[in-house]
Image (cartoon, rainbow over all chains, first blue to last red):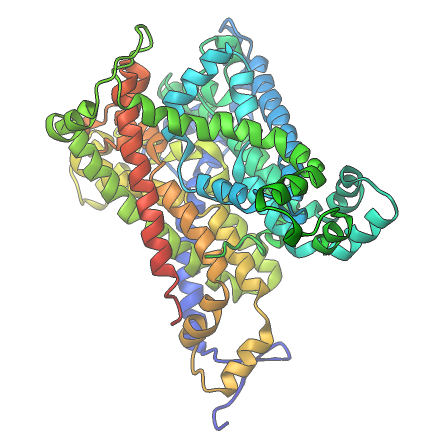
Length: 291
Length: 316
């Protein structure tokens, strides 16, 4: 080879031109700023004292940061007849119940589909894959009819129960189990006399912890971010996201508190992701779909 | 291997009995499998499959939640396509919206994931977070409304006035010319989600030795490497990402409503999803709303099938 090999650290870098590296850096920086600045602006807004919020033109920096907006959240919502803490409770309650339910049901189903062979297995998996192809809001009208037939309209159940059968988590877990749980290990557990359920619980599940976390974040982000729903009318059952919309509809004077509420809302999923990023990426490695 | 296990347990050999009998025996042998699948599958049928079929059925009736439904044949569909100008507008908007956000978010996810893969691992994690964060942060996209607002809060207007580009603030979200492009930008901003992570993982799982072999075989630059080695290896991920990108590109209705209100000015950002909401949620014309849902289903499935066909040609 006539051309000089580039190295990065001590490794030889193949087919990498300096121009290309620069191009990548430039594109990533520009796109990164586009992604990052709005997020940053929310945080800045939430820390601005009132006089800085009213400053013209609006600034991307904060001179005297304050936590006033966060404490304002509680006083602002203090005079509404549903206490502010109730909205937070609703969001947390719905998210935990739905996510735990989804984890239990979907992981059992994933084990069954990935590791057991029974008539109808492929057909069932195909149907589940097909359901990934349409957005669930398209179903909401008939969904409403079914929920009212159960008498679940205006209860927590209308949000929690359907979310337990979210397919994306099941899909990711099934794919991950297929590649990372060797059949031989399951086989020896069965030979030792373990029941199929026990094999799932004590052998397969501990081996797919990264997939749990991925399933949890997939389910979590949907429930956590669920806003005003057509299935819930009672004020005391509504979520934190709905409360944020109410705060923001109060106009300029409340935009500091609105930003503070948004920051609280976004910090939780971001934190969950940061703590589990490497496991989630690991799970995604087997997310591919065969044609 | 579980297959061999089933074979030893199986009391009858496949060749000895009828197919039906064999299937029945197999089902009995795998009772646990069905029990483990049942809770999820039951809920899945009730809340995902049943609504689809119910929509199809109701789309042929005049159901309104109060009276018993009457069979009306395909009249809902003829009304949709022949008498409902707003629906035709909604179709146009949806297709424009999907045709831009779908491919752009998909290619953006792929491109950014590819670029991120070239970074050292520590920086990679941070950059991944920056790109992924908007998609999991819920209503944080409402900040765009603040940035583009028409009062003294609007950073964009303030900057443009400062630069002398405009003399008075533009009413971004009340102007039919701007709402659609703005919604597309915001939709793209929130679109680097699960598919993006899947691509990042896909790039990481490719064996380095493949690239070394390819370099010997005469691959000259990273673009050739991407086309001939990386993408064909990642085809399953590409397929998964495509399904999610299509699904999302048709489901952005909520973002539009949050930004422009409902209905949007002159229906400029009115999508099929909004039309469905309008008739189903507000007017209780369930039969008619169901026919809208059915049309949307057909569009979503058709796009999925077309894209899958196209993707199977990658790297050939």
